[in-house]
Image (cartoon, rainbow, N blue to C red; front, side, top):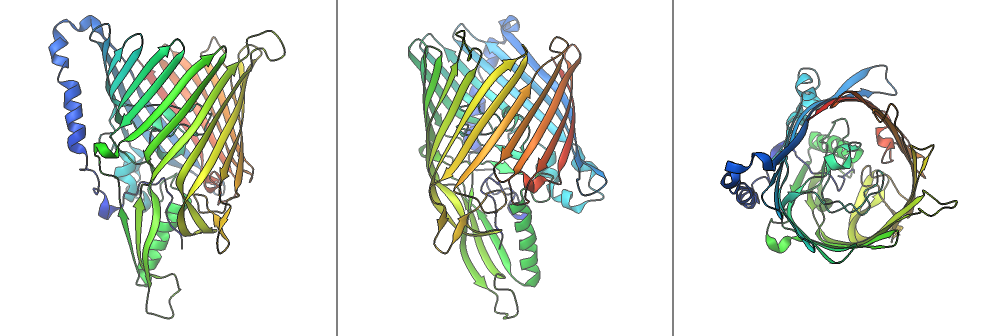
Amino acid sequence: MVDLHPALFIKMSNMKFSFRKRGNDMKRWLFYVLLIPLPLYAADSADKIEYSGYVKTETWIKNYNDQEHLSLSSWKNTVDVALQYTMSDKWTFFFHPRYFYDAAYSLRTDYNSYYDKNQESMGNTQRTEWLRDCYFDYTSPQLDLRLGKQQVVWGMADGIPLLDRVMPFDLSYYWLPDFADIRIPLWMMKMEYSPKVDSTLQLLVIPDFEASRSAPPHAPFAFKSFNDFDSFRNFNAAIGGTTDLRLYQPAKQFKNSRVGVRWRSMVGNLEYTFNWLYGYSTNAYTYTDSFFPTPNPFDPPFIGDYQFSRRHKLMQMMGFSFNRSFVERGPLEGLTIRGEFAYLKDEPTYYGTEGSRQSTEPSDKYAYVLGFDKNFFTNWLFSVQFAQFIHEDADRPGNLQILNAYTYGTMEKIENTLTLKIATDFLHERLQPEVLVIYGDDNDGRISFKTKYELRDNLWLTLGYHHFWGSVWGSNGQFRNNDQIVFEAKYTY
C-alpha cells in the first residue's frame, strides 16, 4: 500500500473547496483595515509613493532522459507590482500584488487527460495568493513593528530549508525556484526590539494558517508517493474498494496562532541567533484511521475500504545559527563560516517498508549545516555546505524503517548532504552565471545551472537547466527522467 507525502496539500476534485471559506472573514477584515487609510493621504501622496515591479514570462521544457522528445512543462506569465507609501517618518505602507497564469495547462487540454485534472490548481492563482505582501511598518530607534501579510526568513542555507520553517512552501516545482517565490506569505505581527546596539529580539504572532502544498498527481513535479497513491486509489476502486481521504486544518482562531521568538546579536565579526517556533506544522501528515478488507477471498489483502486523514500536528523547533567573516590578514582572510542547527520536537514521521507506509509516529529530529564561503579571483564565489539530518529512532518494532516523505523509500538514521555553489559575473555584472550542486550520500542529487544576461536596461534573459539523478526512491532521483530546460525573459521597472 502506498500513501501520501506530508507536505502535500491535496486538492482532489471532490474536496477542492473544503477549507477555502474558513478564515476568509478574518483575512478580509485585515485587508480592509490595511487599505482604508490610503485615500485619506491621497491628496499629497505623489512624492511619497515609490513603486517597482516586473513583467516576466518563463518557459519550462521537460527533457526525458529515457525518451527522445521534449515536452512543455510550464509557460508561466507573471505581472508583479510593489508600492511603498511613506506616511510619516515612522510609518510606511507596503502593497505587493502578483498575478500569474500558466498557459501550458490550457495548451495541453486536448491531448493529455492527466494535465486536465491539474489545469485549475497549476494554471491559475488560487485563493488570495495574488497578494504577496500587504503591511504597515513602524520604525523607531529601538522598536520596529510590521503588521500585515508578509514573509519572515530565518535560515540562509543554499537550497536547504533548515531554520527557514516559519513560512509554508509551495512545492509545485519542487525546490527549484528561488525560495522567495515559493514561500507562502501569511498575515502576522512581527515585532523587533533592540535593547542595545547590534542586538535584536524578534517576536512573531501568526494567527493566519496556510498549509504547505505540492503539485497534484501527474503534474511535472508531483511526488512519487502522490502519483503512486493516485494509482492505488484507482486500482482499489476498480476491484471494489473505497478510499476516503479527509483533510483537517487547525481553525483560524487566535488561540491556534503560531508563535516565534528569535534573538540576534553581534560579537565582533560573529553574528549569532537563537530561534524558537511553536504551533501547528504547516505540513500535513497522513494517518490511516480505518481499513476493512473486501470479503472476496481472491482479492489482494490490501484491497478494501480505507479511511485516511491528513492532519497538522503541534510541534516546536529550537535552533541557532552563526555567521563569522574573517577580515583580518592571514590565510583565512575573506572566508565566511556559517552554520545552522535545528531540533524538531515531536515531528510526525513515516515508518514502514520500501513503498509502503505502515504507521505515522511523532519523533525528535536534529539537523545542522556548516557552510564555507570565499571569493577567488576577485569575483568568483565558492560556497560549500555539509549537512546532516538525524532521526532519533532508526526503526520501529517489526523492523519498520524510516521512510522518505516524498517517495516512501527507506532512509538511514543519519542522512548526509553536500552542496556546492559557484557564482560569478562578467561584462560589468551584465552576465551572471551560477551553478548549485546538491549531493546526498545515497548518490541522490541534482545540478541546477542558470545564467542571467542583461540585454538592455531593465531587460534580463535567463537560461537554466536542472538535472536529476539517483534511485527512484530518492528525493531527487524520483525526478531522474524529468530534467528541465528553463528560459525566462524579465522586464523590471
